[in-house]
Image 1 (cartoon, rainbow, N blue to C red):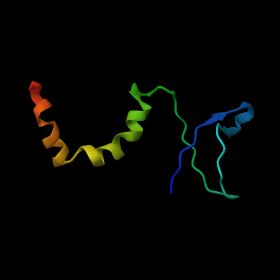
Image 2: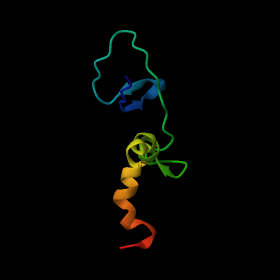
Image 3: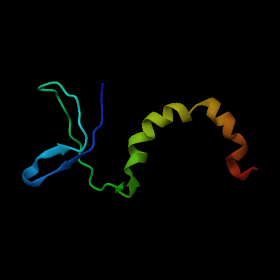
Image 4: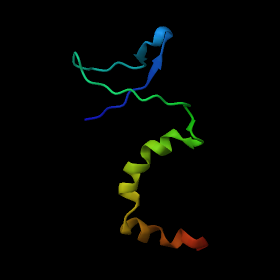
Length: 75
């Protein structure tokens, strides 16, 4: 299972989590560096990170049907 924690880079390149995490000794971790906290290439990071999981729920025939009245400028 993947869990995401926020961290800061301190002097000397030390990466420190900003909240406690109950991790086992020698746990394998992956570190992603966010170039800009607000955007990445002009696109909000939260949009990029949530796009795949949200599309599983939103890109369905049921959702298309529910929102059809709001498409193409219809009211």
